[in-house]
View 1: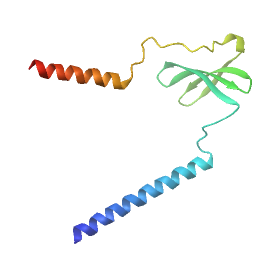
View 2 (view 1 turned 90 degrees about the vertical axis):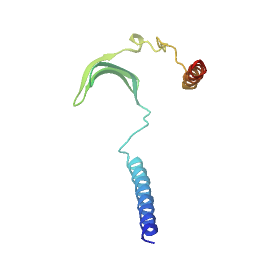
View 3 (view 1 turned 180 degrees about the horizontal axis):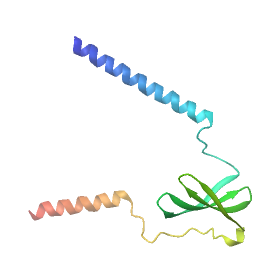
Length: 117
């Protein structure tokens, strides 16, 4: 009987923690502490130059700026004209292979290895 009571207590505490987490997440989202969408500010591109040091191109309204971003500071570098920027998407050097295909290759290799034994 004591074990059942202990199990029910653990389940009740777990449900309370889940509910508190859900409501806390909704409250943070409504408070604006985490801003996920802006019509006038966009990060166009980010380039890592060292650990925790980045150069970013940002769009504020219709103007473009480059900034240096570190863990503690943001430094204005220069303003940019739209004509100076290249907006074409570059293909990555390595082709993207779907995870399912990689998994299938590993399965085939494993089956082939088992047959050889």
